[in-house]
Image 1 (cartoon, one colour):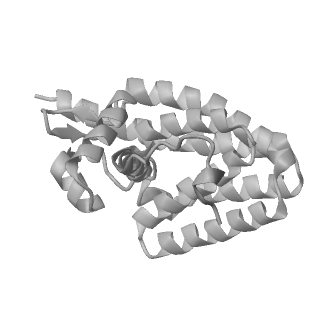
Image 2 (image 1 turned 180 degrees about the vertical axis):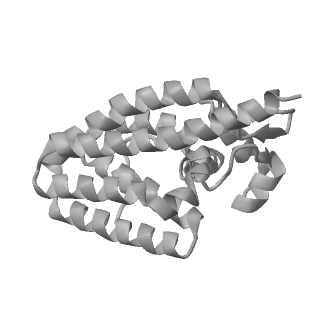
Length: 235
């Protein structure tokens, strides 16, 4: 048991407010990345604070950080919106994602463990079941878990952080992939291809599977974005 004489280094008191700010940021970021908040959604400091069960100060700090990262756009002093995807942003983000996520998949393969593969298989099974039930929020949450379990296995935390920054911008728009992707199961075939490559410890195959997954998503999203822009431009 420690007593006063055991503590030779001064200890700074825990800043509970700062801790809450970090927790609020992490929670809100996760909701955005995993597509739990759709594009165009308006968020107020008060509504987010009530949802998280915290005061407005840590939420305000979290919103400021996420706005600086491009995940939210200010509408007023207390209101932000999840931005709607444009074709220019989609093109840029997809090019960056192909480079970063392809690299993460490649680097993860030599480090992958059997327990990681089991997790990916179980997660994919959950995705399939959620699609069967048209529970697309669960599909998106599990899809995020699938990708980031793979990327984290790369043992390159800075690379994973860079990937997260791109998902902050694209995550909400992944809602637009459904229900079409639930019918054609394009993502399922790409994920199964990646799992097969991981079992063979074939980094080139795993990289190709993930890159194909991103390109399939791009084709679907770009068609939707261009269609909406055309509708908006119509008299």
